[in-house]
Image 1 (cartoon, rainbow, N blue to C red):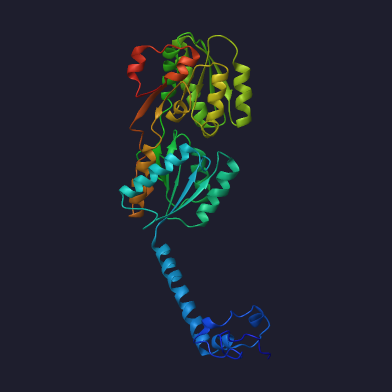
Image 2 (tube, rainbow, N blue to C red):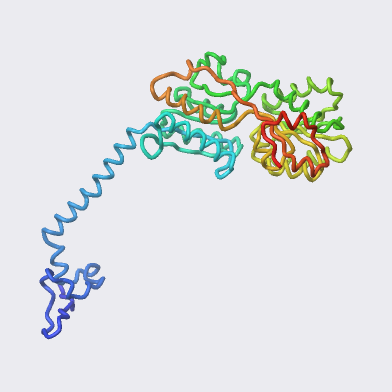
Length: 377
């Protein structure tokens, strides 16, 4: 084996091969070829002996120990899989997650101490519901948390044993997700969004805000039970208000603009937007189209009015996510979802965007302003 030319640089001394490294700061660093070409130098002698082996063994043990401790810590933590119907970064989605995390903290659970959460974002797409349901179930979580009907259905097709807590389902019995509200009976329970009857209230409020409206488009998801049920409730109320109803199907985002554009253009037109993942995902587009065509519109959730929509009436979407954490805690402590009743909303919000009303030339009656839970100016 060759010797390298690493020499002592101490002033006043003859150059010599580096053999002792107790004062190695006086020497140049070993060139890369010392190791790559097995060139022999004193520094390499030091690491090549017993001390090098001991160091590597100690280093391996030091690295392995925290990894082992971390692995044990992870195995002790309950695991939650969370499947959402919205996109990551969506403000509404972030608010729901924040509410859920707040609820967990109230139960003494947090991701930095004693629980682990895996998130998936389906963006309202059927293929992603299926894909992410399979991914989350494969992680073997202790509890699955999700939002809307399509997400619950995808999870139930993948597992009938892992408990599921849902937060935003309309008519869970009619959708076939549970046996009854008081005794769900399977592996799913949670929080219903609202009863179909609330949809008739949307038409009533729209007529109070804009009395001249006599022709109303109802934007809905026609292939789901929630879409059919909401439209039926609006239809039942239409005759009392002398309003002509026109259903607009909104299963895909690309259909929404065309449907609203084809409907708008006649005086006395208005819009009711029903609840579905599609309209939530495309809410900014819908609000913009309503403004463009000057359509007085009422929406199912506060997030629409905050985003520029004329008015909204519906349940608080954050509260059931906060309350869902309590069900998660009870399930982790041994209770079964089959025995936990599905709970109804506890609060409904009527929100008016006065700025949008003025843009549309609508003067909202003072009595209606007094009834609003929130007025956006």
